[in-house]
Length: 446
Image (cartoon, rainbow, N blue to C red):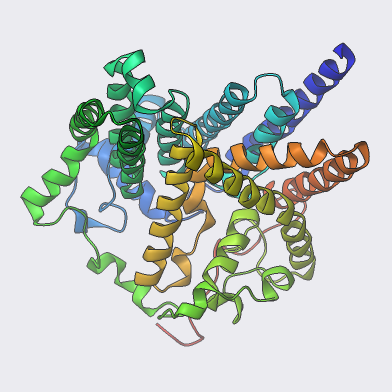
C-alpha cells in the first residue's frame, strides 16, 4: 500500500510540474494582445490606469463588461510598471485555485481514494480550454474561480441545514463570492442563481422554509452589496442593467452563420473530428460540435496555425481521445442526479443545478447571437468542478473493474494529455506565423 501511495504521489507531482511548465511557458511566450477580445480588454485596462473611473458602457468593445477583472488588472499593471506577463500569470494562479477546489471536493466526498483525486486534478490541468484561458487577458478564469468557490461551499456544507449548523457567516461568504462573480462577468449571476436554487430546494425537501428564506435573504443582500450594485448603477445611469447591441459590437452582425435553427443544436458533423476549426461549413452550423472542439482543442485557431493537415490530424486524435472523459462526465452526472433525487443535502444538488444553468444559458445565448465567435467552450469553464467531480467518479469506477481496464484507461488518458500538451503549448511544435483567430470576411469585403 505504501508503495502504491508513493507511486501516486510521484504521478501527482509529475502531472502538476508538466501542467505548470505549459502554463508558465505560455504566459511568457503567448502574445499579450492575442486571444478572445484581448486587444479591447487591454484598452479598458489602460483606461482605468489613467483615471480609475468606470467608462460609459458604449465607450468601447469591452467597457460594457463588469469591471472587477479590469480594475484588478489595472492596479497590477500600475503597481508593477506595466509588466504585461503578470496578467496571464495571475490567470494561471487563479486557474490552479480551481484545480485545488476540485481536488478538495473529491477528497471530501471520497477521502480514501487518492486515484480519483489524481484524476480530478489531471482532467482540469490538461483541459485545453483551461490552458488557453490561463494565457489570455480575459475575465473568464476569474468568474470560473468565483463560481467554483460558491459551488464548493454549497457542496461541502450539506445544504441549508448544514448552512445553519455552521452559521450564517458561511452564507454571507457564499453571497460575497457570488456577488464578485457577477462583478467579474454577467455569467457570474449563475453562481447566485445556483446558490438560491440549491438552498431553496433543500429547504423544501427538509420542510425548513423559514431557515432557507433567511439564508437566501442574507446571501442575496451580500451579493448585491458586493456585485449587484454595478447593474443597479447601470440601470440608474443608462436605463439598462446590461447593454446589448451597442455600436461597438455591431461588427458581429456581419459574421457567419447569421442565424440558427433547431438542427444547429442537434447535429454533430464528421468535421468535428476531421477538420476541427469553426469556419468549416459543416461545423459552422453545429453549436455543440463547435463547443466540443473549443473545449478540447483550438477551434478558433488562437494558438495553432489555421491551415495545417498536421494540426487537423492532431485535433482529430485529441477529440477522439477526449470522448472518454466527456462520456464519463455525462455518465457520472446521471448517477449524481439519481443521488440528488433520493436524498437532500448531497453535493450533487448544487453541482447539477450549476450544470443545468450554465448549459441552458449558453444555448440560449447562442440562439440569440447566431455568430461563430460566441461559440466558445471557454465560456463553460464555470463547469470545472462538476466536470472533474463526475468524470473522475466514473473513470475511477471503470478502473476498478480490472487491472486490464485500468491500464487501458490510463493509456487513453495519458495519450490525451500528451496530445493536449503538443497543441496547447504555444509555438512548441506548431509555429503560428499569422495573427490569432480565423478570417471570417470574404475577399474584397470592407
